[in-house]
Amino acid sequence: MKWQVVGTKKGTSCRVLEGGSGAPVVFFHGAGGLLQDNPFLDQLAQGYHVFAPEWPGYGESAGEELLEDMLDFTLHGWDLVEALGLKQPHLVGHSMGGMIAAEMACVAPHDLAKLVLVSPAGLWMDEHPVPDIFALLPYQIAEVLFHDPQQGQALLTGGADLSDMEALKEFYIGSQRRLSMAGKILFPIPNRRLSKRLYRLTAESLVLWGASDRLLVPAYAERWKTLIPQARVEVIGDAGHMLPYEQSDQLVRSVTGFLR
Image (tube, rainbow, N blue to C red):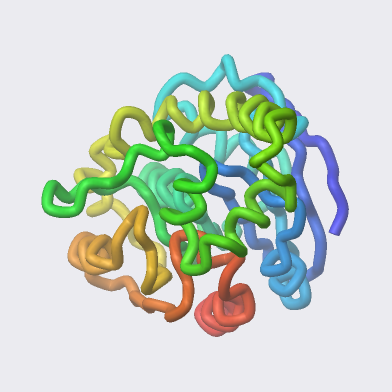
């Protein structure tokens, strides 16, 4: 897969990881951004033409000052699809990216093929409050996001030793820009009344969840099923919130089986 830079008519400039051939699939990453290695994208690109844009405020993408609220993020997603020249792509979104993909599918229900939501944010259940990721220390983030926190911390930090103060400083500096962008739609709680708009969603939908998700517990998967009665819901074992990275093989099998 290779990187390209795409400009939108709103003025944002986004880096997009692209590869493969076949039906177009657009993958929207979560609040932590794309990691150094994204094996599930490489696997998905073996059967589909995959586009994985970085949101403004992530990596080398720019124009974050132009996006202020949920509607801005949603329209930016469709602006990207247009800039890439795609017609009715499959949309796949993880966590924050799933929240945005669902909003996109509600705003323009006939402009996508199928929808895959992987541990999507966007709903709130008082009986299952979502931990405040903006207040967590690095080791706490891994414990919340991963089935295997030790492996998760290595993935999140690129293997850096966070007991070293310089490494810890670099980690925080790198995270600040990303999380300040994500905070526009996730802080103080990841609820922008998406549930009131899901009635507009008509695309065939798949919801995937990690059985060990401690950020958005699996009860949220059932809530999505209630709000999107036509959706398929699959809970995958030995995976937390970062399901795409912990069980990439199973994720790709589930996604490709659904998209066929």
